[in-house]
Length: 375
Length: 237
Image (cartoon, rainbow over all chains, first blue to last red; front, side, top):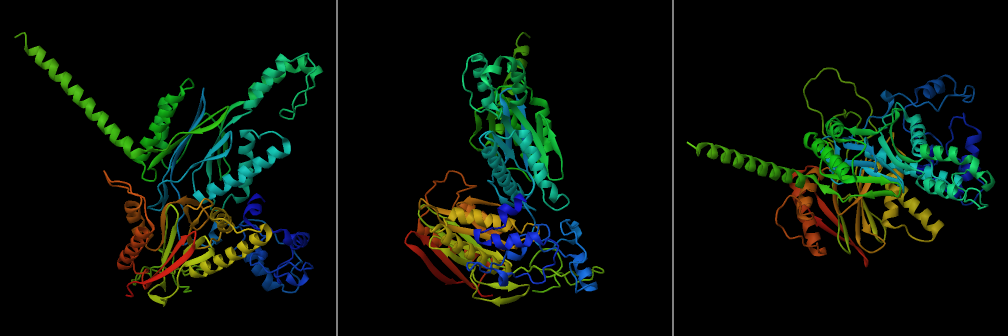
């Protein structure tokens, strides 16, 4: 599993132990320490060896089935294959003595200029602000950015795992995985943990196939000439077939490329959309976004709508606050706006309101005084 | 490790009045108290901790510091459950040695932080009950502080307090080192002497108001010349 590869250390010296174990999956580990049968002199006892090949869900959980069966039949533990891969229900997990970090406002929407993602930066931990300047929008690669909501450790690690898997895909297939593919990959990686207390709610914002459009134009221009094509997107269209494939290619490429927005949740939800807001402050953000977001917005207008939405959500939601981060994804990649302090925004707004009231008051006074004059 | 503690706030004994039948479950965790603090400067880093090891109403030891030296440029401070702190530092030491033997160089502070994050997350469903703060010098020689939560989420900071008195100390550090919540103040960069004095004052205040912090203060100052340790007595009551 991807999680085990990243978090469970597999040193090069340990290959012998792990391959032996996988050949006998159902044997109960009565003698967990296997340093008696190692042939390599460099093997030394590492405290993690026993649970390296155990699923991370199993570690530390009270295995009632195994203990019951151990009582009944001590001599032949391999008689019945125990389904050791099922995650246990959460009532049997060890209760934690500390709370996890939660609570946020993140939003993302598509418009004619690409995708815009914005989030607050407060990381709270059951009433205490654990970090006022955390980063909730994490770039995954040059054209994909993910907003994170839920437990911050889960989001950080799963984004890291996703970035690793996408990079491996890119190296193996010499093209970037589409945003839809990345969303599906993340959803399937999180599926074994459904029912556990893992909590990840991410929106993946990306631009697919920006380089496709350039390739497409090159291809159309050079149709009919014997020009060797670079391997683009794994499609090996020879120059002789160029003219017949062009209209299909261009429409397919037009469908494939462009901005994309997906919402992935650890309970299994995976949705495509034009506008998402996630977190405890999302109802407040939705009200601003539903009012202000249209396809035809300019980049400045879209940025100000996103900032306003986060600002209003942080004003009303206790678990959101501090700063706002805004990321903008175009065909050239993502760009990040400078982080802004929302405390300043609040004072600026108060100042604006005060000036507005003052000008209204002046106009009113001018009207009343002009009415008195003719008499 | 007492098994009779029920799950409310960690480290506090339950109230002695009858609330009805209560189910007691064995808890593999205990809260041993202690506070850790780390500050990063331009060319130095400071990691400080108190040395009291407590559990419930008892003190197990007055001389159990919570800073552990990892490399010549990195110190980690761990507070929370002492059993997990010990095992975690043993695992980190073993991994550091393995890295040194495979790659022929010592791990940098940033690399240790990333590795610790994956070690902690590997136990996502039965976590190490430890609040870690790593202080050290990065590759450019500037001070770096990395603060963690028990499940592996981390980030780089300039200063951070962790442990039982963290909620009391963090606002004070925000004000004095980050110059937050003040108007019209000149932002003066922190010198090493001023930082050490500030850490001493901050821990004296923590010992006054937090029962799990006290006895003595151990300060490790990390500069490119090495790690310099000082011990200072605190309130013992």
